[in-house]
Structure formats: C-alpha cells, structure tokens
Image (cartoon, rainbow, N blue to C red):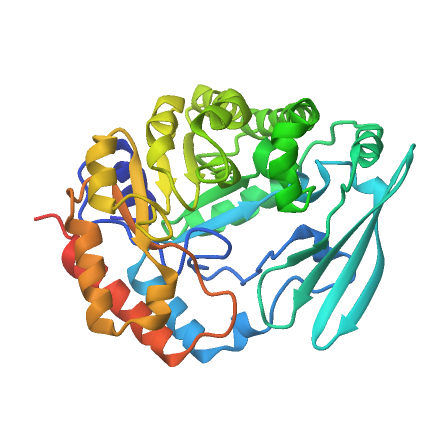
Length: 394
C-alpha cells in the first residue's frame, strides 16, 4: 500500500495495512523528501538576501540517517507553502515590503523589514540563528492603533498564486506514492503575528472591534487565495494553522467561537466543496475545542498533546472523537530528546493501541530544528520501528 493510499484511507476510516507514520514531523519541515531536493522554507520572509535553507539539514549525518529510514519505512509526505499565505504582513502585497537591513550579531542575523503605506512606514524585526531552523520575532509590526490604520491603508489587489510550482513537486512525490499537504495560515494566526503576543491578548478584550476588523481583512484575502487554489486543482489535503492562540488558558471557548469558528469554518466548507480534506495543526489544550473542530468538519487534527503540554490523553481523545476525525500524534518531541529507546517504544505502543488503531496517524508533536543528537537519532529509529511493530492491522 502506498503512503497516499494509506493516509487517505485512514482519514476516510477505511481498512489499511498499518497505522501511517509521519517522521520526523508533519509540521515545520519535510517529513520525507522522497528523492526531492531538500528545501527547508523557514519563512518566505527570508528570501530577500537571506538563505532559507539551513546547512545542517543536508550535512547532519544523524538527521540524514533518520530521513533515509523514513524514506524506506514511513509515509512520503511533503508540506507545501505558497508565499502568498505568509502570515507576517496581513497578506499585504509584496511590492510594499522590503528588507531594510540584515545585521549579524553573535552568529545570528537580525532582519529588519519595512512596510511602506500611504499613512507612513511600519517596521518588523526578526532574528534568524545559524543552524536553527526557525525565526524569532524581535519587534512586532503593530504597536498602537495608528499602526493598524497604516497597514489597512495599503491598497490590496489579488495576485494569483503560482500553482505550477506546486504541481511540479506534487507530481514528483506522487510518482513515489507520496502525498502533498498545502499549508494555510488562518486569520487569527495572521493577526496575532502582527503584535507582541501579550498585547494581542489584551487587545482581544480592550480593542475587540479592531482585532475583528483585522481578522475580517485577513479572512477575505485568504479566502480569495484559497478559492483560487481549489479552482485550479490544488488537492487533496489543506493543512490549516489551528489558531492555538485562542485556546485555553489564553482565551475562553466563547472567544474561540468568535475569533476562529466563525471564519475557519467557512474555509473548511470551501475545501469540502471541492472534495478536499481539512487538516488542522493546534498545539496545547484542545479538550474544550475538540467537538467544535469535529462540528466544523475537520478531517485530521494534530498533534493532540497529552498533559502537561496539552490537556487530553490520546486514548481519551480517540474515544471523545468517536471516529469522526483522524487524530495525529502524540509523542512529545521533548521525550524524543530525553527518554531512552525502551521508553519511546512504550509510548508508541500506548499512542497506537490506546483507544483503537483506526483513524490514527503516528507522529511526534514537533520535529528537529537544529542538528540531531545521537540520542534523538536512536529514539527516532525506535519510534519508526515501534510504529511498524504495533501499528499493523491483523
């Protein structure tokens, strides 16, 4: 059975040979390149004069051993991101954004972006550390309500995404029996990214109408882009940022309804209208929103974290979902770093067998963002071997 068949049958609740295995992770990086040249898109922000491919990914022998084993035994899956869905500037047209400065500081790069608007300039600064495959926000784009008016003053015109590049890679991975995910940032994710996070949470109460205005703007722009992709044959799985910023304890379920369900549900309906599948990535506490996700029509949810990072064990989550949604998880990445292989074997067995094997995909809650230790390499090997051992359907 190919990866594509195994994954899609699992999502639909049909019989497979074994539980699918995502390794190293479904989010943030390539799970399995399947012979495709490794291109690690840390952020499309970094394309202007800053390499977005970290050397460790193609040089680290421990990581490459994991990738080789995954190529042989796990699912061939690649998450594709369209530049148009970059979450950091409210989908503002690129012609208004430029890199103003790239400054090296103790092995890190501080990248300053300037956004030119009819009402004045805005500035965003992020940090990219050498051989660490992520970025950190150092100065948010929006500090006050004047900045909100600035970003909303930029004229917006729809620019069709380049679907040919997507199809090029999709064809290559499908020739190997693999499957493409398409990652989409949601309105809540885009808007929260504009602020320092504590200020964003305060504004959701004190400046609620402003936050909703920004969310509406992001929604309209994302919807138009998403509809274009669907109309032009992008398929089959759309992987949405799950707006974990709006889960408890940051926000109440009522706020989740107002800021997330109202908007994301319309994306999911659109995807289903074109016979696509909806996957949602949401760290943290999902117990209070699991039924909401099911009711919105989510087909796949990851990474379903157990306490203390989350608030629901995988067995309970399976029982609560009642087969209405495929669950992905839930081996904590910190356990992959800290435990021994025997403990990883035990955790994999529990994840697969607790609550039933059906509609379940084995995965870690995150993937490596920097060179891989020998311990992590050994644990990934055990993770994969245990997944095959315990995941078979007799």
